[in-house]
Length: 372
Ligand code: IPM
Ligand code: MN
Image 1 (cartoon, protein in one colour):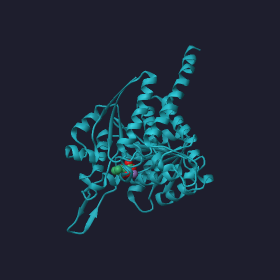
Image 2: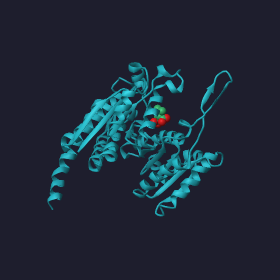
Image 3: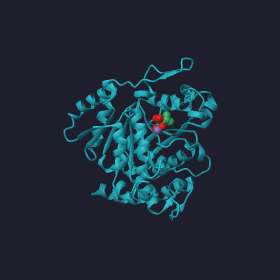
Image 4: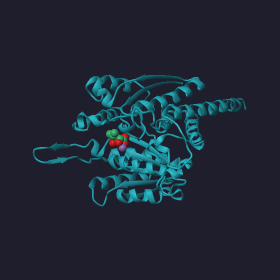
């Protein structure tokens, strides 16, 4: 198959981890005889330095003309004093809005090999497998009015949702829950916020169209606690933009490292794929960042933009195998443990080798299945 992938590597560790993710996609293309075409454009701080804006028009045009966009990370300390609209993060938010994907899927899975990496007890995290569906185009991130009136000493943002915005993302959550363990936990703060009351009422209405899926509502504060106490009780967690941002970082504790979490944003003109970890400027350029979140993001890209489910699963298995064999980037190392220390590049190469083996092993079987 043919696939045009735009890589916007961005800032900090973005370039190093997306390089590994792109190499994984190339491996899949080579072995499967697919034509993946890659191009690269600047975003975030890199784009501010190069073109004076966090999302230059040429990057946006290339993104809209692609079949999938793979992003690394945006943000850096040198931009911290800029107003929100001029920061690297604004480039990412503009890109999300322009591509139109409103459902950000963030799976958080307790990898057995990393059980000891979590500060939570293994018996608590064992078997946890959560899919966050984070609304990505509404709420406080985009609501108007917003301002910081410096002279007046006040600032405000607006958490705003329309019923339609809630309904469309709720459908994604229920549809995906139907393919999993058939439970949606909808997160809100309906005891305080009107916008959450609308959220709860819209989600409840959508739920009636999915009789096979159980719906539970949780206040966001309680949800934050239950996620740590009993992560296995969750299947799909549906949350508005900011709540989903916060809870998905929290869920990284279940997986062992923020470096493990992938994401896919679907529902718009072009899907956007980004690992959940940020630009991590403190470790950028040292070759020690964990590329597995970005690599698992590449798997999501194949699943949601290329319908290559077998290949997506093969990438996920290759990652699990690499961890099972004890290879660890710095973020996954523990004092006194016997992991084999690897760099970003080595981790990527190890996954690539295992992926090649899995795909080559699978091919004769597929051919036989086709003959039968
Ligand atoms: C994320 C990030 C972004 C967000 C930032 C970089 C704008 O934290 O993808 O979770 O808040 O959405
Ligand atoms: Mn975040």
